[in-house]
Image (cartoon, rainbow, N blue to C red; front, side, top):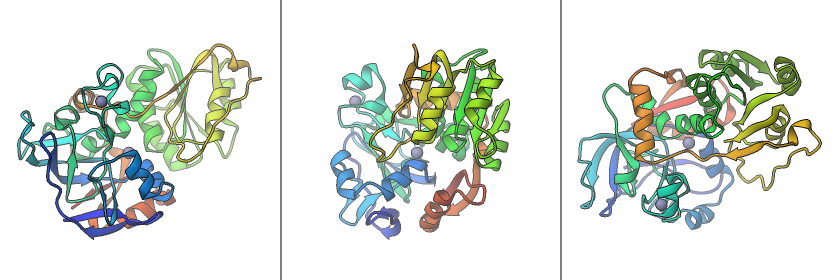
Length: 353
Ligand SMILES: [Zn+2]
Ligand SMILES: [Zn+2]
């Protein structure tokens, strides 16, 4: 089969590799659509394959390199002998973080922080991909949910909404979302879905700010034209927002969040900092006193996916405008270049076999 493989740092190639075979608890999915994600850029550019195979042991690391891609949708091709609730032909998606379903973290926290063999799902950018612990990580997708929405549910919709939920932003609260890339836009949409009172979107790319208005932002701030923290203070009578979401993973935006949040408020960090070894915060800002800092990995697992599927299937959110480009699996290397460049208004790329 054709699959996107990372043979060395900074490189992605389409290679011919064997179709995976499922173990007793696994399924193999025939991909119908996949995409590239900000995390893929970190995996390709920053992390050596050896480091990733050590961190996430499993069949996704081939002798040729790392199988790429963790956001996909498709139909069950083959199910392992212990998998009872899924059968060949079922249309399904899997969480981008797969948990064992049995460890303390899976049972009491979230599948995303599994300590029982869970990991990032790799290999969706291929004709077929393997999902471990299928009963707890794979959800059936009804016809009313498009492939595009299914892909978003597998990662960034869950991640962006998670940043809002875990910060407890609700009816009437003020929220600022720093960076309106795909995850930030999902956080903006999540703030709207949860009934927040004032939703402020910050970015430096005009197309992304335009999109944020469609997804529910009440006010947009172009960080190239004005100081976002000052503007947020003037919009909130000098108090700051209840919740500031960091959705890109830089020191500058994290720090801005800590300055933009009101006393007692919450900084919700969901951006991926990659190999940034440390972030810091100002202790002399008024908002340093009595506040929370929350970090979130994509909330995962079948039950989470099913909840988000209901949200989309019944038309309560529509994030399909995130898909700005369409490409074929053969073009995955070009998709990485396009996504990394942030050119041409790119947000999400729908990739089909
Ligand atoms: Zn992702
Ligand atoms: Zn687990």
